[in-house]
Amino acid sequence: MFFARPRTSTRLEVWPTFVDALSTVLMAIVFVLMTFLVAQVFLVETINDRDTELANLQAQLRLLETNLAKAKDQHQSATSKVTALEELIKNLNTQLEQLTKDMNLEKQQHTDQKTVNERIKTDLEKLEERLKQLQNLLDLAKEESNKKDEEVKKLQLGLQAVEKENEKHKNAIRVGQFRSQFFAQLKSILGDRSDVRVVDDRFVFQSEVLFGVGSAELGEDGKKQLSSLIKALKEIGNKIPPEINWILRVDGHTDNRPIKSNQFPSNWELSTARAIAVVQYMIANGIEGKHLVAAGFGEFQPLNATTKDIDRNRRIEFKLDQR
Image (cartoon, rainbow, N blue to C red; front, side, top):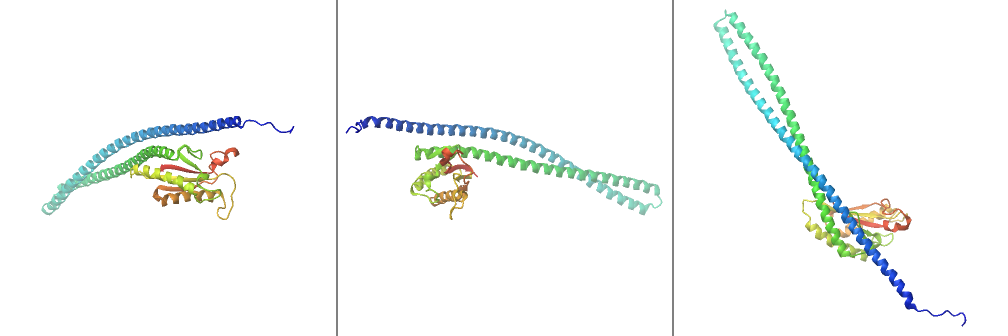
């Protein structure tokens, strides 16, 4: 009886524990909101950078169009010169034929007029020399015209390349906008979960949400979470114009703890099998395979290299991007 402990009120012990739990929940909510805001700021900066690149490409496009117009004008001028030279050569050939006829006629009628014949012969040689010179000019003009044709072709190819790059950057900006909508909609569906978060331009699920330990088989809770993601992806995919070739990258990651089993000899196989399992489930639920990519990174792309928070490295990442 002397060693019995005095009774204390349990009501006072519950209250501090409740306050600590409530504080922890509030801190988690604040952390998730701050992470979402940082991701939004990063996305806005990325879109602004893409706008700058787009403006530079448009300036290059206008410069190439100007050079192409100049090259076309030069090509037309060279073509006109070639046409004029061909006409002149044609006239000289006509004159040559006429002189040859006259010479033959004079030889027949005036065999004793050697002086006249010599003069005609000299004129003929001069005409032949002039004809050779004009022919050389014609060859040079044709060569110059061919060079201009090559320059025009090169400028056209350069213009097409810039237009393709310009279109690619436009599509990248548009995909970034749809990515923001997709993340916002998915976040709204899934709610504030500590095991599902936004990291830069990716949506990250902890592996434990989708798979059991050391397994690549989707659990029921994982299928439920993926169904929400598939629903959001379908809604956003219907809004993306058909000319944008978009994809959803599914990346599997593990921690650096070694694994060796008959099914998974290393973390490479495990991370790849998990990514493929997610893609197969999404295809089975209505997402076209041409919009999906599966990749395994093993333990070589960690979010946190410290042993304290190593569990965060076991994850599945989703990134909406253009092909």
